[in-house]
Amino acid sequence: MKATLLKITLYLLIITLCSCSSTSNTVPGGSGKDSVRKEEWAIVIHGGAGTLSRDKMTPEMDAEYRKALGDALKTGKKILSEGGSSLDAVEKTIRVMEDNPLFNAGKGAVFTHDGKNELDAAIMDGSNLAAGSVACVTDIRNPISAARKVMTNSPHVMLTGSGASQFAREQGLEIVPPSYFYTERRFNELQEILKKEKNGTVGCCALDKNGNLAAGTSTGGMVNKRYNRVGDAPIIGAGTYANNNTCAVSATGHGEYFIRWTVAHDISALMEYKGLSLKDASELVVNDKLVKAGGSGGVICVDKTGNVSMPFNSAGMFRGFATADGKEGIFIYKDERLK
Image 1 (cartoon, helix red, strand yellow):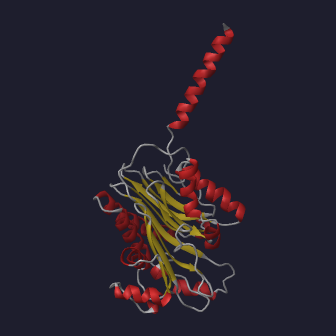
Image 2 (image 1 turned 180 degrees about the vertical axis):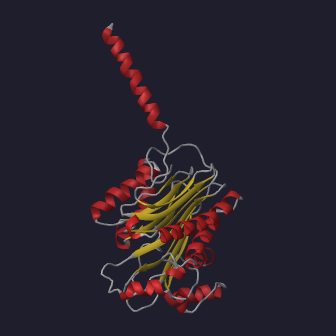
Image 3 (image 1 turned 120 degrees about the vertical axis):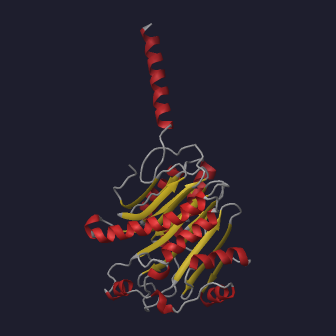
């Protein structure tokens, strides 16, 4: 009799534990399993990852970055909440960050070894796996818009250099003199002899009311880069990827590692082929595979039901998210969590 009661007690305990674990939800920077409840829409953004710590950020800089992230997030939220497409939300949100000199993309792009600005960007439509990207452009004000035109108005996926600029001009996009991208702060970074190369990127992933996913990434690359180096941002499957069957991903960090480990696609593949949740897949790639390889950085991603995940293995990452149910947050440092 005692043995039977013990078995029943253990059985009930196991059921209780399983039930508790299955109801926990993923939030950016948090823990728990992905929610199975479908969000009407969701958006997640990043503004680069790196050695971000409170002791290196003045209160004024902290406030500036949070406002900039908030402005970008607000743009995407409005589009999605009004029934706009995930592609529009991604492009227009990234344009806000490209136009803000705080971020290493567009106006705030870092300088190459030769004192120039070379920009890369990509966008992908999860509904049909269409994609477009540009690399090594020097005079397109908003590279993310050029990437979208490559996707929609050409038979190609990637255009580079002067050819990409010619195409953008023919598409009626705004062309600016290279001096437009000059900012004193970024130029001074180059003059510091660049003891450590800095990298950063902006990105956005979104799920719209029609269930379509999209991802986009834009960057000025690494400070002091040479030889027309191209990182992961414009490479589909490395720094940018979207698939309605799984998730949308945008990466930021040391691009060579993200290219070699095809980080963005790997997260999607782990979900599709192994049945991993967004949280488990993204954390496995960023905090296990990349760490073992020696690569630093992070990703933002959203899955087909509106779960968001933002893992990173660096000291910090500019990031934010919002979902249709009213949850949202903006974070910079590693120890920040959704309250």
